[in-house]
Image 1 (cartoon, rainbow, N blue to C red):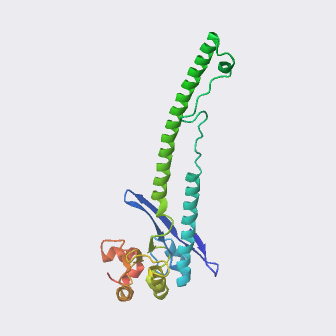
Image 2: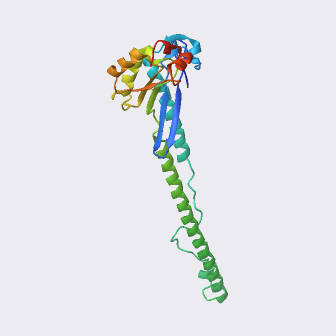
Image 3: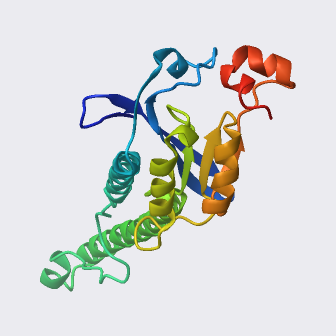
Length: 247
C-alpha cells in the first residue's frame, strides 16, 4: 500500500493477512520515515538516504487507509456470500390436496371414466411425492449454504480492522522517536484505536540509547531488534550503524 503524504513524498505500508484454525487477523507494517539514514547494505530504503520524518498523524494515517481497505474487502465478501440464490421448488407443496380431473364429476357412473380418474390421481400422487423429495433435498442444500455463509463470516470477521501494528516499514523508528511514541500512544489509547498492549511492535537496528528510553516511556510496547548477523564484526559490515551502537 503506497501512501502519498502532504509534501508529496510516498511511503509504503504492508497489510499482512493471517488465517489459522485459531482464528484470523490482519497486521499492518508501517513506515516512520521517508528514506533512512542507517545505510544498511541489504535494504532498498537505506540507499535513499534520509529525506524526512513522518509526523504522528502521518503514521496513524496509514492505519486509517488500511482499515478502509480491509472493511471494503469484508463488505464485498459478505455481499457475495449473501447474494447466493435460494432455489425455488416448483410444483405442489407438502400436504397440498390432490385434485382429480373434471371428468370424475361429469361421469360418476361411467367405469371407464372412473379408471381414468384413478390413473390421473395416481400420477398426481406420484408427482406430489417427487415434489416432496425435491423440497427436502433443496432444504438440505440450503442448510449447507447457510452453514458455509456463517463459517465464511466467522473466518473473515476479524479481518475487518487491523489488530497488530509493527514499525518495520521505511525508516528507523527510534530516529523519529517523539512522533513514533505519540503514534504508539494513539494506537493503544482506549478512546482511539484501543489496541491491546503487546500488539504494537517497534523494530530497530539497535539505537541503544533510545531503546533504554523506550522501555521507560512505553514499557507496554513490544521491541524487535534486527541483528542480521551472529557477531559484531559481521554485523558492522552490513549495518553501518552497528559501529556506533554495539549490541
